[in-house]
Amino acid sequence: MRQIKLMVISIIVLIGCSKSTEEQIVEEMTVLNNATDFDFFDYFLHENEILILGEASHGDGKTFKVKSEMVKHLIDNFGYNTIAFEARDFLEMEIINGRTGINSLAPYLNQNNWVRQWSPWGPSQQIQPLVEVAQADQNLKFIGLEPYASRNIHHILIYLKSELAEINAEIFDPQKWDLLQGIHLNLLNRKPDLISSDDYLSYLDYLDENFNHLKQLGDNQKNNHILFLLQSVENLHTYVKISQIHASDLPEKEALNKIVKLRDKQMAENLMWHKKRNPDAKIIVWMANFHGARDLKNIRFADGNPERYKKFNVFGEHISNTYGDKVFSIAFTSSEGKSKMPYDFEGIEKQIIEPEDNTLEKTLENTNADFGFVNFREIRRTKPSLKEEYFNSIMLGYVNQNGKWLNAFDGLFYVRKQEPAKPIK
Image 1 (spheres, rainbow, N blue to C red):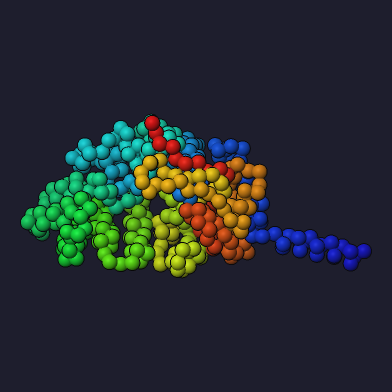
Image 2 (cartoon, helix red, strand yellow):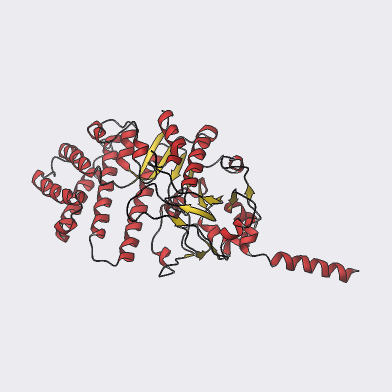
C-alpha cells in the first residue's frame, strides 16, 4: 500500500513538473469580468507611489481605452494625483501645471485641448476618458518626460536667452547666442547638413557653461526658478546631443542604442525632478512597455545582437533603481487582433498580432479570458524558481523574444483581442 501511495505522489509530482513555465504563469492569472474590472488593484497598490502603465505598441487602441479608464479609476479610488507622459516634453507640462514666470511660452500651446495634441495617442477616439479626466480635475499635475519636442524648440530658445541673459549676465555672450540660434533654427527646420561637428560642440559647450554657472550659485540664490532653469538647460542639452547622434554617421542600431540611453535617462531625471519637489505625488506613467521595464538585461533581442538590451538602461530601470518597490510596472499584451496608430500617413501600417505557439501569449489565448491580470511580483515571491526561467513573449512590439520576463515587469495586463487606434472625426 505504501508503495502505491509513493507511486501516486510521484505521478502527481511528474505531472506538475511537466507543465511549461508559461502554463504555470497563466495559472496565476486573475480572469477579469470586463475591461474595467480593476478590483485586482486592491491587493497591492496601497503602498505604491509610481505606477507605470505600458503598451506593446503605440497603435493599441483597445489598450488605450483600458488605460484611460484605469487612470480614472486610480485617481478616484487610490489618490493618484499626477500623470507622466511619454512624448510630452518637460516644459510643456510645466506650462500646463501653471508654473509662474514662463507665461511667454504659453501662447504656442493649446491649453484647452493639449491632450489631443499629444502624438500618437491624442488623435485616438479611445483615449476620450483620459481627455475628460485631464480637463475636469483641476488638482491633477502633469510631468512631461521628454527632453524637448521640435514643435516648441524655437520658443524655448527665445525664453532661455532672456532668462540666462539676466541671471548669467557675467558670462552671457549675446553674439555667441545669436550664432547658436542659427544652429538651433537648422535643428528646428530639420537641416542637419547645415550643422557641422564644430557647431554641435560649440552649442553643447555653451550650454554647459551656462548650466555650470547656474549650478555654482549659492544656496541662498537657488530658488525654485533657478532650479527649474537648470532642469530646462539640462533638457535642451540632451535634445542637442540626441540631434547630434541622429546626424552622425553611426550605424543605425548603434545610434539608436545611444539615443535610448540618453533619452530614457532624461525621462527618468524629469520624473525624479518632479517627485523631489512634490514628495506626496502619486504618479501614473503612460508609456510603451519597452521604456517601462524594470529589467531588460535578461531579454534576448530578436533582431540582431541578442545582448543589445544590456547596452543601456531604460526609464523603468532608472526609476526602479531609485524608488525600489514603490514602483510597480505593468506591461500590456494581446494574443490576436490588429494594431495601428490613428493616422493614414504613408508608412503607417496595420500590424496583425499572431503569437507563435511557444509564447506566453499563445498560452493566454488558450484560456477563456478576454481580459486578465498576472501579478509577476507575487509569482516571484511565491514561486521564486520561476523568475530564473526563460520563456518567449511578444510583449515588446509583438516581436517574439526569449528572456526572463518575470523580472522585466511587476505585472501583465492581458487584452485578448487588440484593435487599431481609431482617429477622431
